[in-house]
Image (cartoon, rainbow, N blue to C red):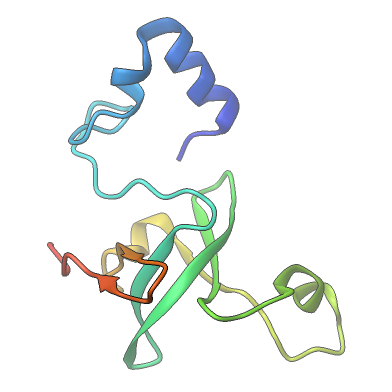
Length: 117
């Protein structure tokens, strides 16, 4: 995981092509998945496949997600009286949860490339 500040530094030094290379990560190894806030992920949680939206990314590689149709999640997560909590996974454990980035069109069509180990 890299910060926005580091991403801008890579673009300044090497150009946008290096940052957005479709097959290589910034450390030169094969790219598994590139996620940003508000991306939609299909992931196996609680024994079933769920559509989740990336709500927050932590610098240590932790990804916080919420259900795709959840609203007002930041305030609900901060409220100690609420039962709502973010679902979180470390970047390395996304593969064991068969996570993959998917797209949902405006009309609700799901485009899922399927899990590729």
